[in-house]
Image 1 (cartoon, helix red, strand yellow):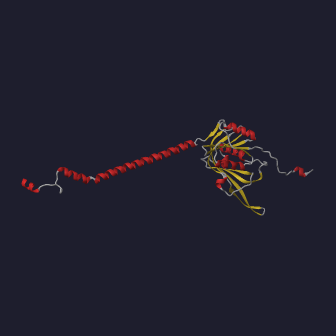
Image 2: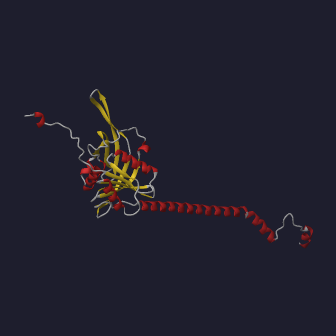
Image 3: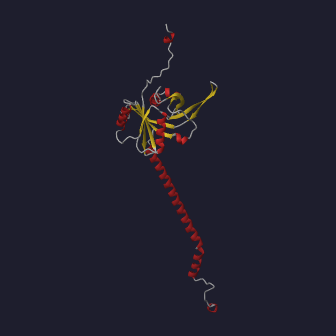
Length: 302
C-alpha cells in the first residue's frame, strides 16, 4: 500500500471560479470620476471595463455587454449633471440590482496616501456585524462578494493577499456604507511576524442605498428608502433659501433707507425753525433795526 497516494497534500491550482465583473460608466463624466473608475478597475483583475453607455435602454446595453464579456456581475457608474454620482451593483442575467447614491468619494490621487499593494493581489473582504442582522444588509453583502471578490487562481491575479476591503455600516439609524481599502504591512524578526498594521491605499466611498430591483436594473421593486430626498429637491430647497435670504436683506435695506430719509427730513425742519420765526415777525409788522420809522412823528401822535 502506497501511503503517499492515500494522504495526498497537494495545493489546488485549478481556476474553478471563472466569473467576471463588468465595470462601465455613462457619458459626460469628469476627470475625477474617470480616475475613480480606473482605480477600481486596477484593483479588480477579474474585471472587464467599458468606457461609455449610450443614452437609451441602460438595462439592455448592460445585458449585451455582460453577454459579450462573459460577466456574471456588473458595476455601473451613472452620472447626473456631471457631478452627481450614482452606483449600480447587480447580477446578470436575473438580478437583483441595487442603486446607491455616492455621498462622498475620493480617488487614490486625491488622498495621496502612503499605502501600496501588489498589482492584481486578492483582497480580504471585511464586513462588520451589521451585515448579518438585517435582510437588506445580507443582500448587499452577497452582491459585494460576487462583484469585488477576486476568484482564486485567476490568471491575472497575484498569488498573495496583501490588502483588505473594509465595509462598515455608518450607524443603526443610517444605512450608509463606508468602503475603505487598506494594505497589510508586516514587521518581521527573522521568520516570526512581530507586528502587522493596516495602511490605507484608497479609494474611499460612502454609499447610500436608494432602491433594490428584482432584475438587471429593471423589474419589480423589492425595497426603497422612504426617507431619501432627491438631489433635485435639495437644489430647489437651497435656491429657495438663498432667495429668502436675499429678499430679507433687500427688505432690511429698504427699511434702513426709509428711516434715514425720515431722520434727514427731521434735521432739516429743526435747522429751519429760526428762519420761519423771523419771517413770521416781519409779516406781523414788528419794528426791526433796519425799518425806516420816524420816532418824532410817533411821539406827536401820542
